[in-house]
Image 1: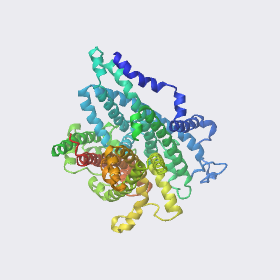
Image 2: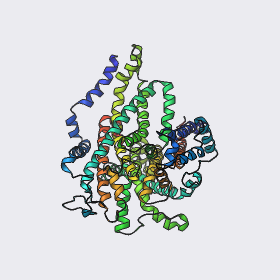
Image 3: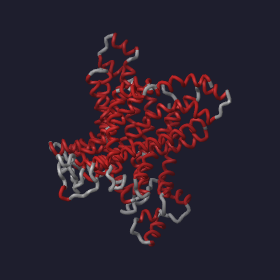
Image 4: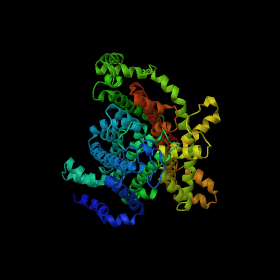
Length: 291
Length: 313
């Protein structure tokens, strides 16, 4: 028991020491956070800083970017700037909820897999099967089964992401359970649930946080891809993928309808990835040297 | 080694079995009647009953599964609901564009990314290294369709060097076909290149810090010889792994790229089938794509044994 707390102490202390100074000292994390904060602010303040994203104004059809329409208008005269501001909501909601829910699911299943052999055998075969199906195909197949909505899209993106997290957590558990301090805890009479929560979980947290940021980035791209294909969130919701999908017809005339939301999408994903890279370097110095 | 290959080969069976069960259950998981789902919103009760008998949906579920799996084992993926053509024939018709696109992307990505990664590792911390790493961080964030439309805008609409969209089959001439593949391959390959360049650099950096590299350098061997024969060969395992893993990434990207560039391949077939709810096609395609992915993983695992004779599982 005491061996375990000594082993865990440095890791826990390092992760929590001065979050703010940590962010400022690491330019990658700082820039990623800054971009994401601006986007989050846009998403929250959308009703005050943007017009109605659904307002059709035939007079203003296919207008190039100007002082009046910062990012131009589409074939229905809808203001692309307003649509992008509202679209940030969809991307951030999808990214955050997929990252959070698939982490919790993956963590739970992964911990159980690492500890219970019979459970591991069955579950890992299922996980391997899901991982064999390309994620975007699995997601569109799932979405078309039910009436599409934002929730359905989120669930459809979560299912192919979970196995990746399960594998990661399981591999951490398998390496931890060979450690002498686990033997010590077992010998001291610690029961399995407590063992998992007190001794194994803390070691899985750092790699899990890093993985969650990558899941977030990939969820944002997948949602945009699904909407682009016409199999994502319903077309009346202004998501970045939907704006791009609806801009396809007039691409040669109004390239901004596709390129501007595309740049926002890339910037968001870049910011999340930078945050992930920064956290990885910080939390796992062994990997940092290699990448 | 043959025991290792055999064991890996056997391990693919449970995976494919899970995929098959999953694909089969998928349609049955849908809320409501699958026959009604297939028939669409404005079908009559007679239409629905007709589809039900035609697909054998009135049989017990285990019986349906046995019939379905029996067909698949004989290479019969069923019949499309809309066109009434065998799914295998529809897939065969659309195979060429997708294979050509995947091949072109693989060639473009590997032939650019591996040398860039080696260069970045060799000149670590230099300007070249920073540019390559900057590209690989950015490249990974650019969605396929953005890359595609930017390329179309610059090279097809503004410069008029290459066709905007469409695919020319090999039968129309090799060069015409290649021309129609240049932009899609670069668009699809951007994220893939970023990934390969990053892993190549990381793997090379690790090998370049080894003692035998210093020995090779100090005994006066030419730099290229040290880099390629001594370092790259030993850094190859992670690179080959990532090239394999990346192909899975490509399969998802193919679906989107084919839509951007209007290429009539398997990706387009999937999207069209999904939007029309032509479930036999969707099931068939998921099986084919999953099988491809499992096969590639198998090849990667087997290639380890050749690249690194120390690996003996």
